[in-house]
Image (tube, rainbow, N blue to C red; front, side):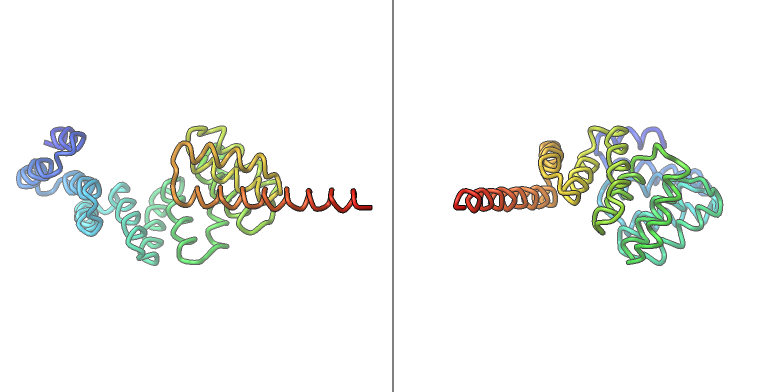
Length: 232
């Protein structure tokens, strides 16, 4: 029935998938994989609270089931229960210290909670242990760019993230913003235009507008300077 439910989810037949999983649960009440699958269906349906309850049910049946622990922590972060999410990610890492998704989730939750230093430490730890982990590299680059420090290193990290996942618009956005903070406006505009072309979110359009405004101001200053020289 689990395989059948996966096929139904792929077809977006969520109600049918839940019916199939309810039947599986009745036949095998101790199988943690069933509520785990229910949680994934609930997430696909946009029901985070119902998904959380299913993840918690799976965790109660099998306390060391990392997928259930991680899923619950992800949902807790999504519904802005950051303290609980952080505790959940740390519980996963207590079972598997090398679990990259848990470390990424922990770093993200720390950032959203307002612990920028804690988030940076986690992201740096991930990048050190996994130098080809594009999300960690991208997020570190963004972190530095937002604070206008370490921009040489930020550029290295942002370029590497794009090399690893060239089709990911979020990474192009970060690379463009790093260029902007370095005053490299043509490169910044080119990267943001590519990101917007892939996925034109309001946020990316805003960043592109900021860069274009910077270019306009720079061109105006250049024209004024040229005019002053000519007047002399």
